[in-house]
Length: 131
Picture 1 (cartoon, rainbow, N blue to C red):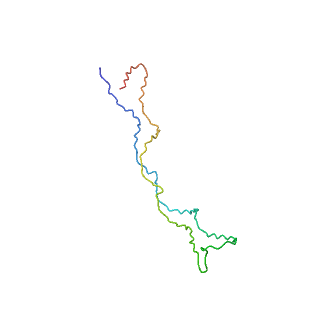
Picture 2: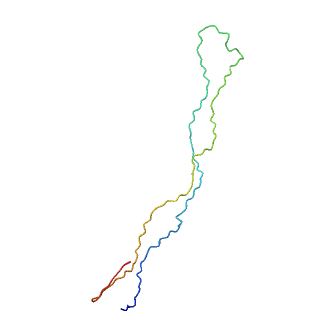
């Protein structure tokens, strides 16, 4: 029995070759700005005032402690004055960094595939084996 020459043929298909590359998404700039805020604060302050009370005399005999001619009474009068000083304090701390976040991105693509079809005409025996 002689064998007929065999013909080899290939069926090809497309496959996905997925690769990733870094892409610049944007940029974040962090900086400080000085803002001025006007602040009004009510501060309670105390002051002294002199009170002189006069009463009519009732004809009593004068004491020896009376204020004589040429003598003075001095009373020191005080008040509080508001003194303003500014100080710098830390209002906020900012840490800037990056972190990697892994997500899943769905990729949809149509792939072509060649399929081998065997057609018979007439009374032909075909043994089709797939490996």
